Length: 315
Image (cartoon, rainbow, N blue to C red):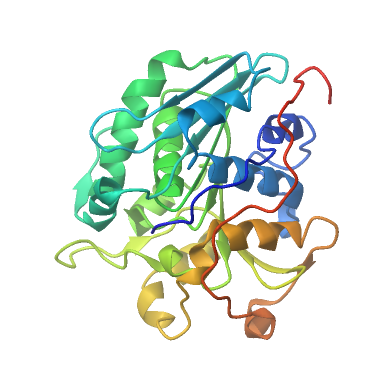
């Protein structure tokens, strides 16, 4: 699940500001699939930035009340934490696969019963989530909303962290993931239908269909929560939790001839969201093939303008 190198810093801190503008539900989307694409775009930017170097990331947030970047334990999965007192918001962004250790986590598809959540979890993603949870838990505020985001492996870990924190009565207000692989089975997905997660999948991203089953094939993996499928231009598809769950079961086999490796690039996620900022058109799932384009592998470079300074006190 590798991504391209992060060359251009994005205005990801605007995610904190957009939170106060949200009029949608706690899952970050309104009824009937009306999506706040501006919020999702900012969440994607900070997920993209989580791939950066610690010193450079911290340099982009001089006005945060608290900001840190950490890579705890042996999982070598980096995360970014931001806190704004004025905006009553904490943000956790988890980096996706970036090294060989992360890749070994991806491949550890054993299903293990997890005590914190009470459901079956993907062993590798659980290992990373546990490492970050132990590191970040003592630093979090219970009186402040928490938003989580991540791309690829980082999306799965962010969602598991959301489950852990929600079970500890933290105010988990939204989880936004991009190109997220599966991390539980259908029973786990049904157990956490109230999890405020919204998955975003660009076109035929191969990683969103992985893993198909646990090592040994005893359990099939499935996705939690609703999904926004980004198509070409302004077009998108929205599936609610039940539809997305059914769609995700065995999705690798169902869509083997359509899946795309380049579609996993953050470059295309960012482009797909930018295309919908001013005009988004929801289409019927039966018409999705009319709005698919084949992309070549890109560099993963974000092309949006960058602002080096941001004032929390000015909306």
